[in-house]
Image (cartoon, rainbow, N blue to C red):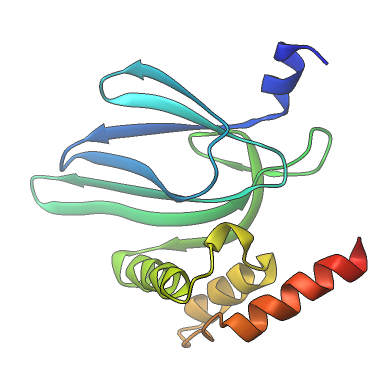
Length: 160
């Protein structure tokens, strides 16, 4: 496998940081490669199958224009995927939330997971779908606990 074959298998995310105007960042995820375009932009890449959280916020002189968080699984070449702005080629979108109050709840859920000693990268993909569905319906999502995580890890071992 050549270097170009490896880079075409990766999922690339363009990040921008213009203080108080456009702020795109990765909340969690294992970055495989990084390329700095200029002092405000860079491209980070993720291996197939890895999960990452991509947060986008934009504002103007009057306040927030958009706030959004997407939790995405990087796909294997040839696998079906959904397109997503700033993500090439796209990914399996596990969670898509817009609006600051809901985005804040997702960020707090990630914080709680980390406080429990669980890396959000390793969490069950179904849990991110659960959070998406519950917040979309205006309900409170269940917390991802160590017991749920252990069950997920056991399920992975039995499926392998």
